[in-house]
Image (cartoon, rainbow, N blue to C red):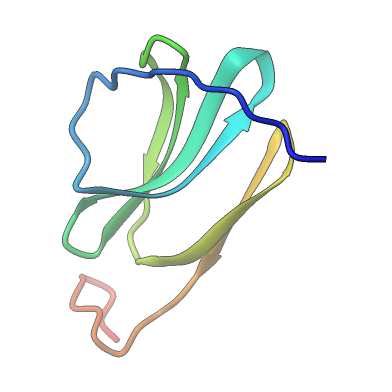
Amino acid sequence: MLLKSETKVNLKKTYRKILYLYPAYNNTFVFLGSVGLRQDCVTHVDAEGKLLFEHVFPVPMDTAGMISDREFIMVETRSKFYLGPEGA
């Protein structure tokens, strides 16, 4: 069964790119986004765009997914092109 609903969310912060966006519990949303070059973050916002949680990762993330409305997973990739403080 395909469900369709629409919610307009005005984010309070600018993101370079939103990679994966999922609905979560209590009318909130979780996404894996990009805040800069090779700087990925997981962000939890409410329906009004208020930031509830954000974590910027020290290495790029490869993919993300929702297991349930309360569980979000990310897959880390340590690219040979990563030029951060930890090296390749």
